[in-house]
Length: 489
Image (cartoon, rainbow, N blue to C red; front, side, top):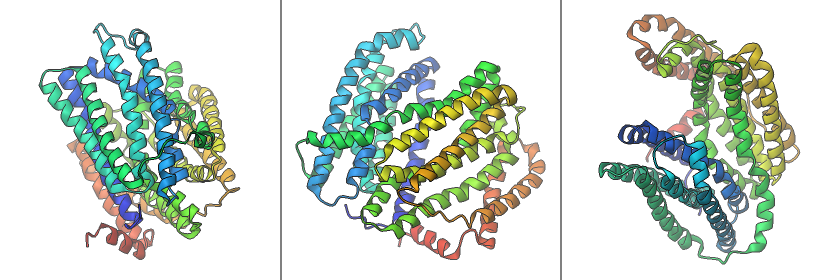
C-alpha cells in the first residue's frame, strides 16, 4: 500500500482508464438497441434508473466513509476491521433491498414501464444488480482508497470489457435482455471474488466489529440524501421548462446541458484519487503537499475548461446542429453559462472535500439542500421570464452560491489557498483562440458542421496551447513535470 509512484502518473493512468470505459459504455447503447430493439433498450433504461436511484441508499455512503476512516491508516488490522465491518453492513443492506425490489417488481413493471412485452422476470432478475453494483463499488473502492490505481484500473477495464463481450456473445446466441442482465451479474460476481482474494492477501480477514458502525454511520448518513438533492439541481430545471414551454425547448436545453457536462470529464481523473490523497496528507499533516495537490487539481482542469467555454460560445450553432441534426434558435451564451456553472460547482467541491476530511458532513448536506432550494425557486421565477436562458442563468448562480457557501464554511477547518494568478492569462489565451476560430469558421462552413468542428477543435487547441506557453500560463517547470510524467523511462 505504499505510494511509490508519482501522484501525477496516477492521474494519467486514471485519464486513460476513464476514456476507455466511457467509450465502451457508449458502445453499450447501439449493441443493445440495434440487436434487441429500441423498446428493449427503453425497458433497460427504466430498470437501471430504478436501480441507480436505490443504490445510494443501499451503500449508505460507506465507500466515501471507508476512504476517510482508512486511507490514512498503516495498520492492516485496523484497515481490515473497517473494511469487513462496512462490507458486512453493505451485504446485509443489499439483501434487504433486493427482497424489497423483488416483491415490488409487479408494481414497478405495471406503473413505470409501459410495454406489452412480458418483462416481469426481467425486472425481478434486475433486483440482483443491487448486490452486484453495491459490492463492486465498495470492493473496488478499496483500491482507490490506497491509490492502487493500476489494480483499480485493471478491474474497471476487465469489468467493462467483460460485460460488453459476454453481452455480445449472449445476443449472438439469440438470447434477450434477461440473459444480458444475468451476464452482467456473472461478470461482477467473478471479479468481486477475485478482488476479495487480493484484498485478503493485503490485510487478512477480520470479524465485523459492530461497535465501529456508529461513528461510520454518523459520518455517512448526512451524505445519503445528497444524491436525491443533486437530481433536483441537475434535472428539475428540465421539468420546469417542460411545464412552461413546448418539448422542443426541453430538447434544446438538454442538448446544451449534455455538452456543458464535458467540463466534468476534465475534472473526473483528478477527483477520482483526490479524497484518498488528501486524507493521506492531512493525516500526516503535510499541508504543503496538500495545498499543492489541490492547486494542480484545480488548475489543470481549469486550463482546459476555460478555452472550452470560449469554444462553446463561438461554435454553438455547429454543436447544436451536430447533436440535434438541425440548426436551433438558441443564445450563444446558453452552453457557456451552464459550463461556467459547473466550473463553480467543481471548484466548490474542493472546499467540500475539506468538510469531508474534517468529518463535518452535515455541512455538505446543508450546502446541497440550500443549493437545491435556490435552484428550484429560481427556475420557477426565471424560466417564465427568460425561457431556457433563465434555467442556464440559475444553474450558474446556484453553483456560484454553493461554492461560496462551501468556501466560507470550510475556512473554519482548513483554509485552502488556491493560486489564481494564471486565470487572467488563461482567459486572454482562450480569447485569442476564440478570435482565430471565429475568423476561420466561415471558410469551413461549406464543408458542413461535422468537418468544421473536426478541423477547428484541434486548431483551436494548438492556438490556445501555443499562446498559453508564450504568455506564461503554463510555466516551464510545469512542462518539464508533465513531460517527466508521460515519459516511460
